[in-house]
Image 1: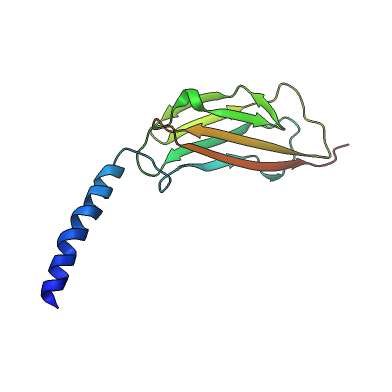
Image 2: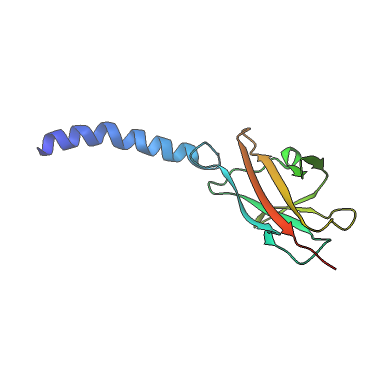
Length: 130
């Protein structure tokens, strides 16, 4: 029994370790970019909201800043994109007040430097204001 475990371990451990070493600083389907914070969401009481999101990598991959895209209600918009130690921050402020009684959709896309795509879509609703 001990001998078969040693043979098994001698083949498996290097394979596992090589996979773990390969993940350092890279992203893959097992370690995608994630949007950790996003707003607004749900029902909001602001007809001129600031739309924000933070993108991070759980495995140390760098976000390609030029790949960041934001769509607001199906239209491509030009957000401000910045990076610091906590991740990549994306900010968009609509040019005018949003009509009330409507649900809005935001989609954020980004790629890491290896080209792996991550996407997050969320909604928020502006209720009736009088």
